[in-house]
Image (cartoon, rainbow, N blue to C red; front, side, top):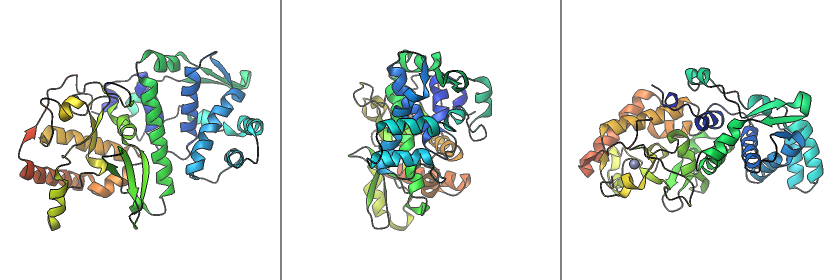
Length: 357
Ligand SMILES: [Zn+2]
């Protein structure tokens, strides 16, 4: 069964819109982020396109400064206006005017459309919740629904987590486009010190991609990978998740010494999960033990899900673990064998909530 079936909540519906499915432009992320801004400062549920235009355009302007490629097609009047604003060729008023006229053409229609083939069709048959209603015809704007307010007011912690996940997804997507010239560059790894995912080009030049917690939480939905206890990815939160190496990080020097039969690249994104601090380093925590085979199956399911849902890390995962499911299974089995031979002890925690993935 697909994990997304288990918890059909508003939060997960939002995730399905933002975090899964193919992307051809980043406007959806900018709209999502401006909806979060607006719902937090709610005055009225009717938002004119003019009022939405600036927060929406500003998110795109901000991203354009670092990543000029924001879509897979030729940029039009709206993106050009964002460029002009960044270069101080036009002011705020003109940016707002052009955005209102040109910036919402596709994104409002496309926002609630998800790629039902790539995700799980049943999920989308059951839940048909929308976060705004398109009222451009009668009111020149959109009407925010209760869903949006519920999502960001009722659920503790939601806004921070979802905001960070949206940002991480955006960073991953634009990085994937930027590196499209050479897919081999997409060797995303984890830096223990900065908690960032980064990539290296052939000259070993490093580029930070995004915060690893935000990138991993979309699948785990704020639950510990091992015991399903609630976790957070907001840096100030008491339940802040640890970024955990499934096959322990202590294997790294042993992997380097293993020579020809070197099976495990432990810093690869395929090996990273979010865990509660108890599981990672609590009294009965994992430390340098090897997760039980049942947990290995869970990791395999996670990686296959990300690959099949066209996650931006798809190419990375394929490169790190294998071209088809069978070879990836073999890779994990080989890594398990290597880890157990070196670390000896198997670890499995007691579940603290029902199994969600
Ligand atoms: Zn845990």
